[in-house]
Image 1 (cartoon, rainbow, N blue to C red):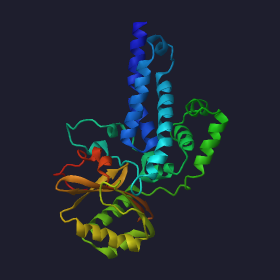
Image 2: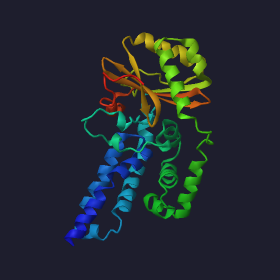
Image 3: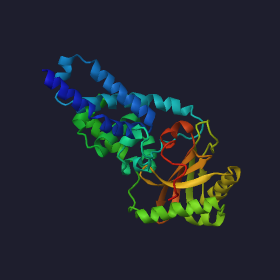
Image 4: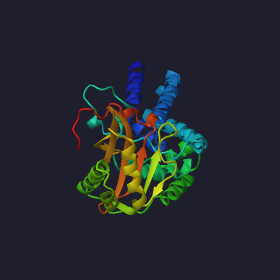
Length: 307
């Protein structure tokens, strides 16, 4: 019995990375994801040993509990985000490979960076109801069967299938994937033009219908409403540069795609994510809320080279 319990405990502990990945896609917040996973483990270790030993798959049990905790958080988040100052955006993720050696581990380091964590995808998830989001993420992203999702949502498998289908209709039709080099070049052109306060080049690289959304959370200066149109975004960006002397831009991966990080006096003050199509930028998400930049305080070395 002791050997079995030890094996189950080890199996449960090994699920943490997967659970963090599930929770982040459900919540869009690293801190809330970590809290949700911690709560699931607290409930696991609160079970009597005999009850834990009887659970055939600790991973499935922990996923179910994590999903339920996330569902509760999503329901309460709707109310909290109505009081949020300005737009609410998901936490930006650094690439673990860009962190300096010897730096403390962070939940962001456990994240698998794929198309399901791009800022564009996460913003779409925000438009779903909590139940739709749980059904869609667990089934379409993580391939959990509806029979298991039913245990998370407290609904029938058929109802969960309908929720996922409803959520899927909210996802825009997939565009042909943009080549990595084209994405990188578009973001690099934005960087150079922004640094040079070159409005004409910014307008050229921005889609005419581009939209910039900023998240300062009331803790950092940011436009409270989205700015629409490349011709309006370009002068706004140059005005920011005028008001922030000494700001330095570095190219970094943001949620798995080319992005920019702004530093002042060696501190990360802004992370910008981009979505591109046909070589032009048509969405910009600017995260300035310092509470969302915690993983970035060590992800960008002050002495590292750009690019």
